[in-house]
Structure formats: C-alpha cells, structure tokens
Length: 596
Image 1: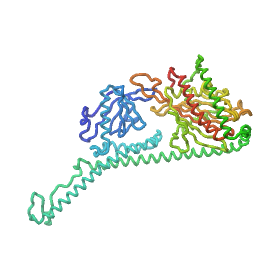
Image 2 (image 1 turned 90 degrees about the horizontal axis):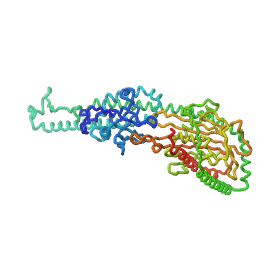
Image 3 (image 1 turned 180 degrees about the vertical axis):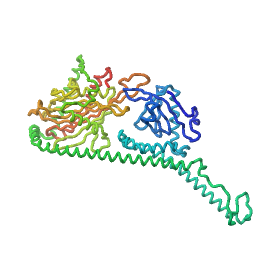
Image 4 (image 1 turned 30 degrees about the horizontal axis):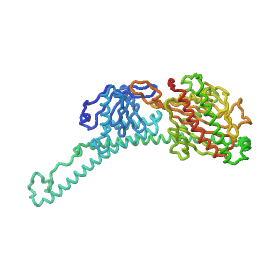
C-alpha cells in the first residue's frame, strides 16, 4: 500500500491542518474485497472531509468515485487474525480492506478515527467551516448539471435521500457556525451600548475639553464622541462571515438540486407504476373473462371432490387427511433408512455453462418465461415483514414461512412465501438440484410419477406429474413449464441471482383426465450466494459461503376442499419440504468443488 499525506506524523495533532483545523486528506492504494469471483482488488482510496471514497485507480479519479461512506456513524473493526485487514461498516454496508503491512493499517485506522471524531456536533472544529468553499460550490453545481444523467445511470431514490442526509449534517454545522458569529456580533453590540452609557454618565465628571485616556473627542458640531475600535466580523474567533455565507448558499443550492432530482425520480416512478397498473387491469379483465368461461368446468371437478366429502363432516375430513399424511411420513422414513444403507452410484448430470442460464431462450414460451422471471425478481424478493397482509405462520431458526389468506368462490388460493439461509451451498447448486429432473424423486416424496413432456431448451422443460392421493380428497396432477435462469448483478458488490420458476401451461400431449383434478401452480425458488472473505491468502471454502433462499408458491388446487384442511396441510408440509430439500443439497455437495 502506498500512502500520501499533506503532512506525515504519528501525532494526531500534526494530522490536523493548522489553517483550517480539519484533518488532512489521506490517499493511497488498499486492497478491497469485491466479490467471490474477483476476490481482493487494488483500489485507490481517499479519506477527505469525513468521507471515505474509492476509485478503480488514481488515474480514474476524474471520472468519479465507485463508492463512498460517510464516517459519522461508521464502525471500524481491525481483523482478529489478519494483521493487515480492517473492516468498515455503516448500517448494512460493509467494506473489507487490507493494507500492505500492519503499520499502514494502523495509520489508516488512526486517520479514519480522527476524521470520525472531528465530524461530531459540538467539537471544536465543527464551528469552523466544513470543507473548502470551492469544493462545496463545485459539488453543488455538478449535482445540478448531472441530475438527468444520474437518473439514466440508475441512481435510486434511496441514494438521493442519503445525499440529503449528508447535506443536512453539513448544513447543521454551518448553522452552528453562523449562529456563533451572530452571538458574537450581539455581544459586541451590547458591549458597545454599555460603553456609550458609561460615557453619558461620566460627562458631568469631566470637562468637555478634556479627553482622559483618549476616550473623548470633539466633532464639528461641538458634541463628544467616544473613541473605541468597532468589532471586526473577521476577527470574531477567526470566523469568515462572507465565506460562511457563500458556503451556506452552496449547501442550500445542493439541497434544492437534490430535492429537484428526488421529485423527478418520484414523478417517473409514479408514471411507471401507473403503466403497470394499467397493464394489471387489462390482465385482470382478460382473466375474468377466461374465468367466467371456466366456471362450468370447475363445477364438474367440484362434484368429483364432493362425492367423497358429503358423507363426512369437516372434522372427519381433517382427521382423515392427518392420518393419511402420518402414514406417508412413516413410509418416507422407512424409505430414507433403506436408501442410506445401500451403496448408491452417483448420477452425474452434465451442467451447461453459465452463459446458457443467462440468455433468453428462443422457444415459443420464451416471452412468457421472461415475464414470469421479471415478476418474481420484482415482487417475490420484496420484504413482507412489515406487510399486514402477510402472516408469519412458522419460524424455525433461519426459516420463516408467511401466508396471505385468499379465497375465490370457496377455493383456497393462499400465496405462501418462505425465506431461509443455508450454509455451505451456493445458489447455483440449490437451483440446479431443484430443477434437475434426474434427481427429483430423491428428495420429492409427494410425487407418484412424472415425465418430461417436451425439452424446450437447455434451461427450460415442460413436465407432467401426478401427486400421491391424500384420501378423501381427489388425486391431483400438474402440467408446468420449469425454467432455470441466472440473473447477473448490475453492481460488482452485489451477488448474482439464480432462479427456478415453475408455472402451469397447456400442452397437446398432456390433456386433463377424468382420473385427476388438474391443479395450477406458480412457484419460484430464488437464491443468492453470499461469500465472506477468507482469512489471509486462503482459498474460498464452503465455510465462507451462505445461500439466501426465497421460495414462493401460488397454488390453485383446482377443486373444492375445506379451507381449514388446506391451510393446516400447507402449514405442516411446506417447512418439511424446504428442510428436506436443503438438507439433500448439503449432503450432495459436501466434499465436492463449489459450483458458483
């Protein structure tokens, strides 16, 4: 690491500019952890004005920084084992940095702590001007001139709100400085009035022609004036009022420019949501028309289900389903024990290259697949923790299962959403085993049989499967398209996203039958791989990786069943399925090379 400073010294007092009272600027090369593909990369890092910024290289500083952190609320953590590494965290954002040697690491940490200490309200330097007048004015003008282009580059409203918070901190410090100036002016005026009052009281004690201590003088009309030097605004604690006023104006200009950009973002976002709403309303009209035409067919399926349910009440129906599920669990346990005792020959399924998963197919369902993928990336990854419509029904360790109760014409259509975090596996591996039909029966215990109706491409197939019947309900079958995709991250610090989406389609070679009730599904398995940097120069192992899983399921059972029974079965079976599948992936990948 090469470090340059305007003044080099181990003393913290000498790290402060004597003219401005601010910590000096620090710049140099540090190794920054980018992601699990590129690992540690050298970056040009600059510490200035309570902000830590980094650039790809020193030569590219003129093109703008690639990221920055405000140090007011930063937490600096030296690594426990690596003597050259230290981490800086602000809320959820964490930078992993490494210096060339422990001495340089200590110098960086001391400088950062000094900048952080000097940024607080009430400190001595907080009453001085924040940064140079020129830099703030140029920053405000640059913000104003690039508001449109920054929107095109994808700057989000959250980033602009962060800028507003930074401007607020600067403005508060400048208001404190100006207030101190005004207080000093008021004190000077009060002192001036007090001295004048004393002059008037002492007029009778001294002849008008005298001037003791040089305090009085005759003017042209014969009156007396007290001689004292007026207060100098420049000399009040060294505060430059004109400079502070210009800086204050530049800060407010920056705030107004950022507010204008926020309004622009919100207007464009409103237009985007209006277009989405219009599309959804059109889809709803088409679905309602199709639904009305399908009501008669559904009623026929209702009759098939109700033949077995009219003879028993809802409690007896529930007990029968529970008993059938318990018998199925025992069969699954016996099957697992018998399989573990056998020496199984591993089946090696060829894995296509990653670029196959990243491309949009050319088959007849390609546009529909892309639409489903985008919908899941937009809505399925949204946090439901604060949404009152979603109910948390299961919480076991890292796994949480949410449910939103929806019914249409007596049919339960509750959407389910589960989040989980699994150590030692990647998102690619989880999605691969979820999509690969050659291992489907190894972990999926509810399927009676299935077959691939058509292979559309290397990453998309159409599957028909029948599920085991749970008496007294009718047996169900499903015909769906299964596609696996890799969504590349737009930022080098964000992980790629792997996704498998299964949604119902129609096919001439798999028409509905009288024996089974056709269910409709829209299911997605969405995975992201998080990699923590290994210690020292060690290679990445499975101890360094964590897979964040989001599983969403929208299922229309296609026929009638008691709502309490369906919800109880879903609450019982979904957590079991997710734990069973993730344990299977961990078992299959243990000891094998990591598949990113």
